[in-house]
Image (tube, rainbow, N blue to C red; front, side):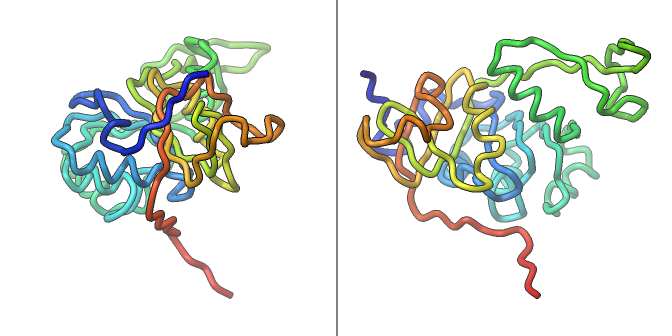
Length: 230
């Protein structure tokens, strides 16, 4: 059995360099790899391409990388909560590719499944279709979308074992499982790290074969973008 556990985040992030492409799990601020993002924001790495559902907020999540101008291109489906993102976009300091959320999810899933491309009706007749190959199936037009290529995937799970088997909790079971399967190297932070064999095999969401490095995170803030009370 392979022990993939790292005792500190510095060791888990070995090999990170400028001009790489990263995937980040999470939906909004839910289930994001907080510890990994914070550690990356302190490194002297720049020119990054980041694939994520969102761009964080000004002082949390991927907003930390944007603040230091570490990101050169953002590939996302929702970016509406980050003023610094807006400022960089309007000043041509940031390259942005907006993708329909279902297409973003499927491009991640296709990467993990080894599928190089697929056709989807999402985005036909909009700016999303610019420069993309189209094809008609049964009288309906579809766009050709390519799977992603990334150097690292950063994933957050609720519980994991030293082999890398993962269990997600609640909304964190969104882009995390797909991105765990898609990374050439998948780095996972978990709230609770247990010994191999301690997890119920029937409850595992991501099997260990997709995970390369795992460590136990600390001091999770779990911030909420907008708190609504009634």
